[in-house]
Image (cartoon, rainbow, N blue to C red; front, side, top):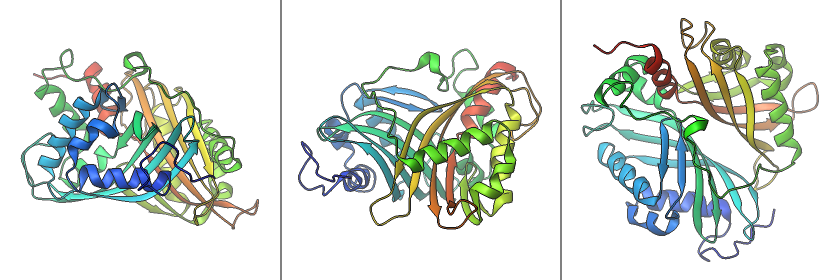
Length: 334
């Protein structure tokens, strides 16, 4: 891919350098005010917990997070991207974030506990500005490391925010804000291969795991769940799908890459829309209507029946946001 960054600050050597660089500048170097020009005035930022509109809302939430976790670090693991600087670019940025819960905030009274989770962010950019974003933080992994479970934590959030009718609404397509990004990724082979694997998993054919994934596959899943080999892959995808067995699976965006001194890799943003009508990772079926936002990354290697297989996978959903949707419809809050 052409790394020339037309109409971007010339201190960035390429698009991954821009994404990783501004992330560090905003969060770790405390350049929160730089969001006034790195993010557009009307940017929609969608996460499973809801939608923010405009850089001022992003600045406010960023300050709150920096206050709660003052030593937070964001370590860029990969940037998988598509598009051109002349039209529009989309980065799918995988981050390992660490820190200590030393101040009271969204996650309650300070616990003093350390955390390490992954974050996946899809950011659209043009002319040195991010103008559209989709973001998933592994809140399930975060609250577990603070000694909580996602379900009671979600219930506590709902109650604190005024109950099911008044609380902040998790993201669903009916509250989405139409942004300016119009792309769907690229037609690279690796993205197509990974999308095909996800589709087969969501068609409930879990027999694909031994053929599509290397025996030594390393996985990172929601809930800060690190895994090794096929059983961990099956546990995550089966646990998710069995909770929502009749939900509609959709792919919103897919990128494949074979560049930048890294293995062939892929990034896919996807969703599940349907009813919580099965036993799985979210317990007893409740009949609640749920939207699951997901982003996943895969890296390929040379082993496997076809001469290649997935050697690393990171797939994130927000368990807290899913439980919040379920409890808003079925919970009691006396």
